[in-house]
Image 1: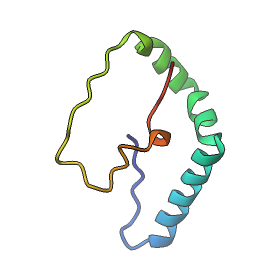
Image 2: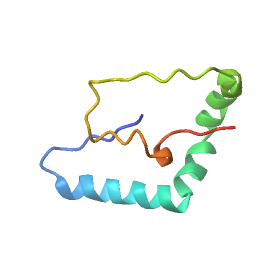
Image 3: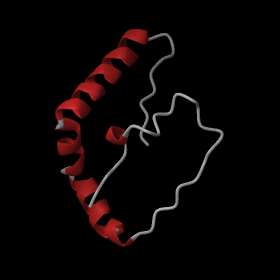
Image 4: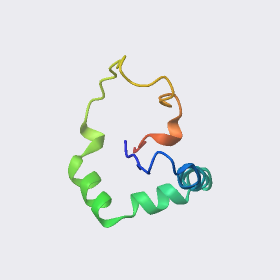
Length: 78
């Protein structure tokens, strides 16, 4: 996960960032930008993700608001 931190009193900035990222996720431009960034392309290629095994672990310390069930927020590569 990647997080953006802003001053806790700057609600407007936090909301603008959240709305912008949500809009990018919904229209596909976030994945296009993220997956074509040179450092990400290199990391994904070297990670050989298709050869890895996935272990799903429960983490009771995650906030209840963590959107674990929303696949838009998680890297899904074939």
